[in-house]
Amino acid sequence: MPVYEYECSACAKVFEVQQRMSDEPLKNCPFCKGEVRKLVSVSSFQLKGGGWYTDGYSGRSNGKDASEGKKESPAPPPCQGGADGCKNCPAAAA
Image (cartoon, rainbow, N blue to C red; front, side):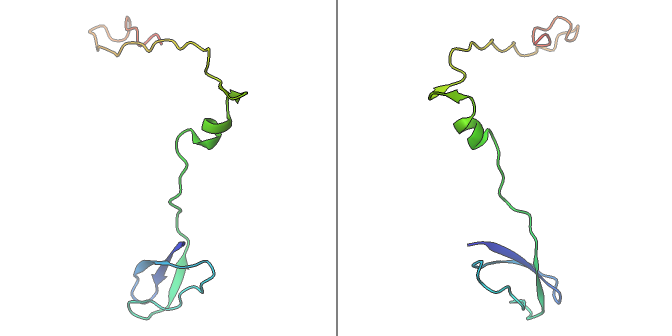
């Protein structure tokens, strides 16, 4: 059930109400009975990471992973912070 946000014009409270989409919007504040207006809120829904397209469909052919058969180069060693900076650092060359 969606959560809607309202603001009261009388007491300035902002509050949330869980309502069905078919329910009528609130007209009065449950705290002071003043007139309320429905706010447009930012959604809390976010897509992060590779996502369903990358993880499920992209780069696969005939049920095989696209990364099969590819050799990965080893990661460079971490920087040691030497006296002459990054000039001779193997991590800086990567």
